[in-house]
Image 1 (cartoon, chains in turn green, cyan):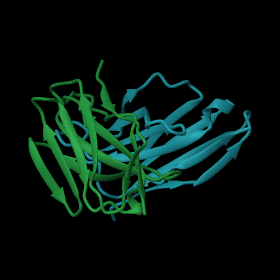
Image 2 (spheres, rainbow over the protein chains, first blue to last red):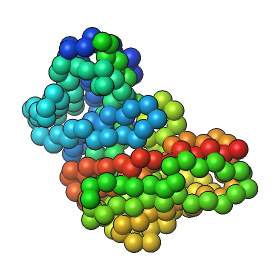
Image 3 (tube, helix red, strand yellow):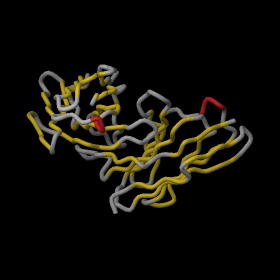
Length: 114
Length: 115
């Protein structure tokens, strides 16, 4: 069964610190990897996409992918209270004729204290 | 236009009512999705439309009936729902459902309460 695992948290960091969120996945043939941010009562917002091994940076966010270890992470530098949210890791399994649907982890709740 | 819109934002219905949720995107995406999300849980896939054809139905009860009138619109028809169906219903779209990347963008959701 295809699975995506995340620590549920809560992960608590002080303002200005680096928050590190981790995710592992079971299907070695997975194609692409996403991080969504979801504020309480709101819908998921796509914040990072990564497709190849290595790091991808966008502002204060860095996504890291290691396909050999089946591991993807999200680093948030200079964390702000507004970063407090649930972060969902999502994985796109191997393509099929019928199309594919993302597999979501259960999410990690991040709390940034001022 | 880079957003997915959903109406209504909130819906309260009785167990005997019939209602519909609507979703629209104008990004030229060829896949559209319905998800159900309960509190403190990840989104749970219900249906996928790929090139306007139903491609995935995750064993959803028949009281939920999807419809894709065209490539920009997606409806979810609701009938005889149960209180446990109360949840946030999310619509999403992606450019190419069979592509390697398949970035999905979510609408704001409809908060459904079944009395």
